[in-house]
Image: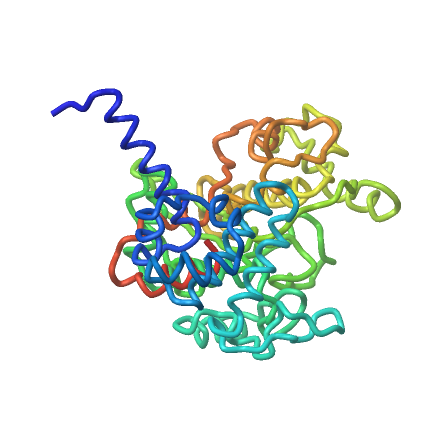
Length: 397
């Protein structure tokens, strides 16, 4: 039976209420009682006195003290983020410190930049999801991949985007079904996924076999994760037209970038001498409609280099992955608004990083920004992934 417009509006309003409250806890046994009591947003919770919420409202809703404290703190962080009084990085830092002791079973105060930090684990291995912990470290060591910020061992820094990438995607290395579903979520035309990366369906800190961008001296080997353009993760698949496509996945977490032109000074001159001839090549995927110095502001400096890398790997496909084409995805959390929408480049003042870079490509469809949840959507509801999704949801989402 078709519902009236008023009934439809009422349903939509109820869904909005549920969406607002689920931000604070994905456990419906905790959120439903709050909804039943007419509490349907972070704003309403923060408007209460903290003691009142924890000692009076929460017990009536059947929520224990520990969970009540967690919900109130998350509601406060949500409101701070929305009101602009807290950056996304500050909000995430507050969250990981809040959940650190119980979730990671670690007291924090690990060393970062020669100082103890509450958001750095004493035991860095705990920064990796337990089901991939051993295999991920073995993979990095076997392939001589450098862990950020320049170590042979995983960092204990809880805001590491590299660690976030590995936690989200490492399970795909040996899961062909899941890997293909992820590719089909990006392009429904994929019919197969290739095992091109150290006998796995996904590789990490991937570099080209040759230094097409001229970033290292001739005869030297590129180091994955250090001193050359690498891609956080890469996959390859076959489209229904028979073409093989390489998928570049760059992972962001709490990054944001100041307005700083990397084309300036002597180092800038070195960079321009290295990359500008490639950018201006008639076959380059970049249109060159703006002053090239615009491409030396982050995040475009990194996006530009990865675009050039993808092009050159396809151009030299017989020496690389034998791919006929490429697609490039930046994975950025929905709430990292500074990174998604603050474009620092003078002549690329579009509404978002995605629109700004698309405006510089000859084939704009090849670059897209996506959230972690949307990337993993094709496998979110599979029972075998429940433990991992619960982990990611509580820690990152």
